[in-house]
Length: 455
Image (cartoon, rainbow, N blue to C red):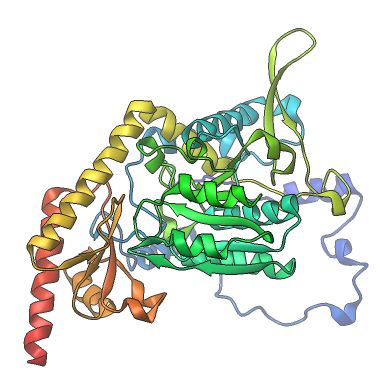
């Protein structure tokens, strides 16, 4: 039998009760009035033996589509990337797996060093001066960037490109509502932010402009021009970026960005049905004291030995609430560690090579779809994803593809009715030429079958 966790024995319970000075568990609830205590039975299944429970959970798990049996072309923010096998080995070690917030740095040096390495690698990838110790995910990181920009500029308007991930835009809007900040969407043209419209929309009340690089459609935004436009109006340039893409694209920091955020999921973190993942937040030195979350710093002790500490803590737990930069009060240390291990295992050249394969394979998919008679929208440079007009309802197409053990692309009509029949196809380094050819052939056959049925 596998016992990862041992249950508490009756003796263990009695010893704990004795230590805290009570005779029973019921005595712990003595201060709660009887009339408000729950007296019924909980609507949950009866307990099962370990063997029976494992069988039930395994049966449930088999209902899920997995990459061992299905080929996935679904991206839209969460991706199937190569994960070095060493990642799971390291993060499964009890020193990391059970670690929590390192409130006592003198006994948390290993955890702090791991976080410090994550910060360092993210700063190098993004071209920014510094990065924090991680955030919940890419969406909340983007929202926090917007709130920082509004507080820093003392302005109440944020411009967000239409080509930013729709869920991330929703998170920004939710955060902004509580602080009476106006969020306005900037239209796109040919799959990228309309720079002419953006220039018209920027005024002296604009705190920040947010773009995604590469954007939701896989297109490459002109970050340098966006930064130039907003900074001329004394606002901040906020860029949400896929960190893997930065292995080959010019980093936002080199293009004038004030804040770069994103999700570290492409590095060593499984898709896991959308989470938990790990957001990153990188910025310039001038904004260092306004960064949400926490920063780990490197120093030396009184004997000159290297050590790590939590530094510049501007959270509500450490300073007066009204002075806090944010009420975010944790970080994704375990997933940040997974990303760090993956980046370390790949190395600088490995990350570049991995990013390059994403570009080459996506380009091959584009050519294959066009050769099969499908229109690929947006002709600019792209990374990971392309938008294909499949000439039929995408949800219905995906049902047919699923029967062929293929997970299709994201149905763009879900976010905008004007994008009917358009699917967002994701091709990572994991996809082979044969798998791409099978997808194109399956789409072509399905479209032909549906066309014949309606003829």
